[in-house]
Image (cartoon, rainbow over all chains, first blue to last red):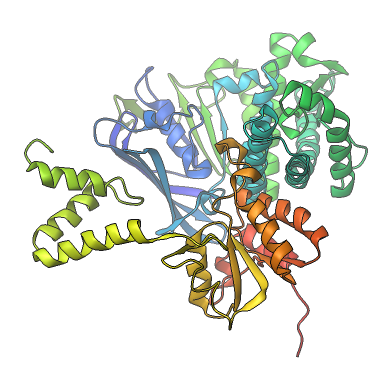
Length: 367
Length: 202
């Protein structure tokens, strides 16, 4: 897919901006705090409908004018598509409205029309950071890939919050009701775990391949899905009964602790190098190489699944790499249909090319 | 803004903007519209609002809103007393009645189960429903709560609770909207429509 145009209004430090994107790599250069990451954040919102940096979306709105918007037009295999996301501050808090080809749609109908793979400096903590970051990695890719995944995730979280409230005793405890919430958790949770298992299986294959190429086969990277309820085979029935069994075995503990203790909200990924945990034993360089492999694999899997390459967004990550790693990373991605890269100066791994300079929320062509 | 407006105008704008879906701009439009209308129209609106508050109460049988107790539906002998349709709110009755096809009785739960909001089964008209089933012995109970998370959980809860009592428990179908195009339906709706598919009889 190829983004042709992005238009921002009152978004972060951009009062208004229109950018005609070119195919291939679009390089944005600028000093810190000029708006490079803001632009990448807006590009990501075209795909995911939400910020990769913040959950307080009021920050996205520039000044007193209470409305910000991000819109884009793209050419995809099926034709052209235009999406927009409007963020408004009202008396009842922040609201977001989405449109697809000019008509209002719900979030689920907006998600995934444009697909993005974003790689930002904080992703380097995928290896040694907390499990929540690795679950977010799975959720963000899968929600774009499959709207029914997003639906199951939203239902799962809502049900989990209801069960948590019931266990805390906000209403008279009721065995029947607890059983109903558990049944809904099994239904939606199975869907999540099934999709995660299949996604990680695909990611693991690509990550292992590219990693072996980079290290000349000297080291072996393994990516394994570690579901909270483990089972031998990836079928809906097997996952469903494993989850049900685990809920049964922890039921007493959940009541005692007054909190849900079981389910995909506790899933994790294991990243192993030659069989040892990277997070505990890997060197800085080994961890970094593993994250790059993971991101390359995410890009490849997204491309396989939707039949065309997603938009690649790289926020200042190449600058953190040496020329060899940066070059290996870019070539690992294969042919990049379209990418958006920010950096403070020409990053390693990229030859001299046309770039756009960002200064205080304004774009300037460098020719 | 309120400083420059006559106090009664500002006060009414403030009252209107507390209503659902009405923001300060719409509230101001309504108020300026009323300012330009004759006195008797404003009086009729004020009277209608007060009459609604003074005269409307819950039907003691189905908990719908009514002027006379029992309500028009509960006291209509031509309606099928053997079928109950369980809804979350009284306004859902009006939605179903608009279709002009259902001929049974209703039961309003006055909410949906949501422990997050402090609403459990005991806070709804569930006990009254059980008593009514014991008294009136319906043969079918249609659960017509919304297909969202709370509506589904409430439907499941009622189905487990009511099945042992004997009546047939049914749930409203989910699926494609009539007159809609398959290619405009979202994936979740299509998935539900496929799950709920049925054999065609001719």
